[in-house]
Length: 341
Image 1 (spheres, one colour):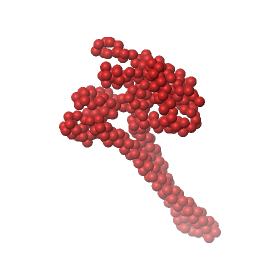
Image 2: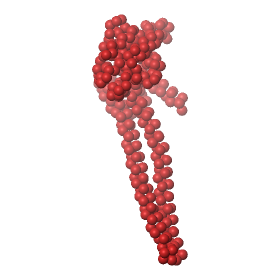
Image 3: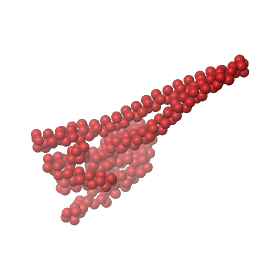
Image 4: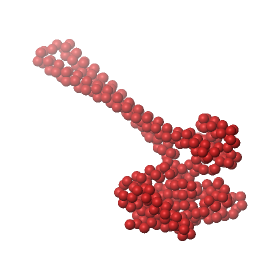
């Protein structure tokens, strides 16, 4: 099954690139996702919208692409998550209702037992007949059977609910991961970065932010094409993931710019990580398979800052971004930390 899925995915990807070139569509991550969905025919309304646009204008504008992506891909992910939430809420309501009925049956049985004991006391006090005594005992047994059935039903429903919760949790995690993931690089996306940095700022523990930008990437893209540019972005991202240890997370901040959040890290430690990243990226080499020639070496400029007490996320990003531009001014391929007060 996995081989079939992989073959199908590869076949779809082969169709995407020629279509992007044919209709002069920029090879951005969102456009990749949009046209991949189109060629895989998983969303008929989307395919019809694209076909109609191409028939009218011969291409798909950037504005139209963005609108279609938000409507048919991004919105669908949000709806899936909301659907999971509703399923879990419905499940909880059902369990709560059954629990109330079970407790009601248990309270009824307790009342039956109390009445039974009262009746049994009359056996000696009033010299009840054997027939009357058996009726009292039989009533207690019937009440016991009823509460056993109710309790067993509740127990079985809890077991089924646990299985359903596990399934929903697994599905929700998969959808959430996709919603927070950059389609091209596999790193966390900008939305995930915004949420994570706000969380770290709200906590009292120290942490560092690293912003890094690929040097001369526009020139590289213009010289060798977007496909080679995408290859550089993927290789850089793969290298960044190697440094994601001890809670460090890497994000595609935008275009050729990346961000890393380093929890429980001071400026000196963050600067060391930044230098390790710079040196690692500097060793990357891209070769042109057609010509066999080695393309321009890849390098990255890095800015580092430590979060100051009660500092906002916006302020920290601004300070780190200033250090990044300072690294560019100093000749690129270097690390510049922000002074910590």
